[in-house]
Length: 372
Image (cartoon, rainbow, N blue to C red):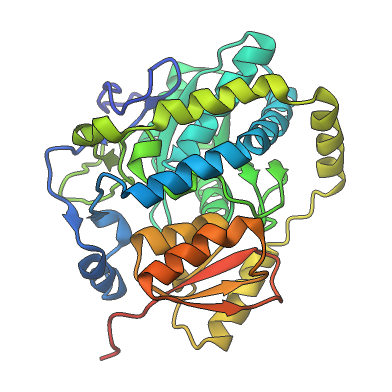
């Protein structure tokens, strides 16, 4: 199959040695709306991938939160990266293409690539592509990578699991790809943290704050969320995204990568092996997070599971870029939730102690569209 998609252009603030974005540049198109306007449109039936939230220079206290969590958890992120990277390398070796799911997966994919370069002096190809809940993965991007790296295995990568929507989307899309093109893709999703029990390839199942969850594009290569809007994305195009060059003075994307890369030197090789052994003994994939989300949905009389966002990373994002209703918290004294308590207080959002869940916390989105 010959593809007529555009060749990947220079996109984002990362070095092309670190990652190549297989995305169509929509930087000149106005797709943004205020959080409230966008929430109303999404709840009114528009798909979230058709528009974008407005992205700003992060306020000082968000940046402070990022720096604090980076300082506190960089060694943990480095260890989890090493655990995942070793498992990937042992699975496919040098014939591996790292495929980050934009955009939360992008910095994690770069860290995995950097670790393998540091440890084994190999430079695996690494791309960032789009997958959109309920709309699917970018098949043009898959074909491009398969044609460019014949005989290689694609390893999909994301930051963390919430209720498992992306894991399920990936599995469904890999099956659809097989039905269409008779090519079997490995649907395993490599993540740093898997509190939702959605994958067998993870660094930890502890629900901790990965620092890149604190910010949006300014820690993700100045790239927006991905867009699938038929007005701008044609049949042979990659999915789209914007490159926010105007935010360049505030970009910490490469600093984040460099800080964790430096921390690789402090990772204890025995600790990596011990954790891999523990992970291999716990290969349970039961999507227990989704079961808890369904319980929460019923208990709080919520219309749709899309309004329930479990995990520290997702809860942080609800407070930063959605219209939050309530925050459920397993343990108010957990070190992983202190920033969430502060953000909730700032936005006037109720925090409820909710000990019966495997996640550290869970964000509930406010219903802003009334039933007709």
